Amino acid sequence: MHRSDQHGFTLIEVLVALVLVSIMTLLAWRGLEGLGRAGEQTTRNEQGLQRIQTGLAQWSADLDALTDVGMSALQPLDFDGQRLRLTRRSSQPNAGVMVVAWTLRASDAGMVWQRWASTPLTDQQALQDAWQTAERWSRTPLAEDAKFVVTFMPVSGWQLFYSRDGTWSNPLSAADKTATGNVALPDGVQLVLDLPAGSGAGLSGKLTRYWLQPTLGATK
Image (cartoon, rainbow, N blue to C red):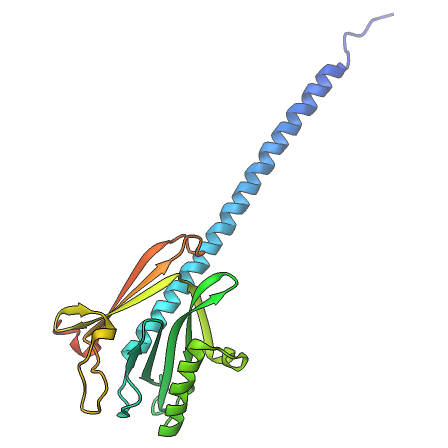
């Protein structure tokens, strides 16, 4: 009889192999989990950045379309430190004037930057009513306001400054009047937003946006 030199694995060898396989599987799983979390964070940052860009683009579009409707009760720009109301031309040709309001609003996720806008209007009484509605919305929003509101991104605070003759000042101290009694449009507007940590865009701190009247762009 010939004795075989082949023999199986011992119990210790099997246990060691199982331990090594378990460790390698755990490491691979943690690596995949880390990649998944990184991908999710990148997606959240991209979406957050897109919301910021969309909000700032809309802000600039509103200011580019500013118009004085010639009514002493409706200021082209009216900022009280908490909300901004403005009158602007509709993006639709000859459609009329829109009343727009911007403010910060408390939400489940913290403070967020919101915009309310009326439909295009041509009647003075309708404009007056929309102006008052914008004021009421900024203080006490109602359920029916939701269809006119867009929420952009988390913002913990904001400031505005107006530029006149090359000098920046607080809008609440501006007193230049037009022939209709309204505060004259500034040469430029500086917007300062405080982005909180964890805003979803990978950004935090102060974000500053400058706007210059289009008619002054060639000379200033």
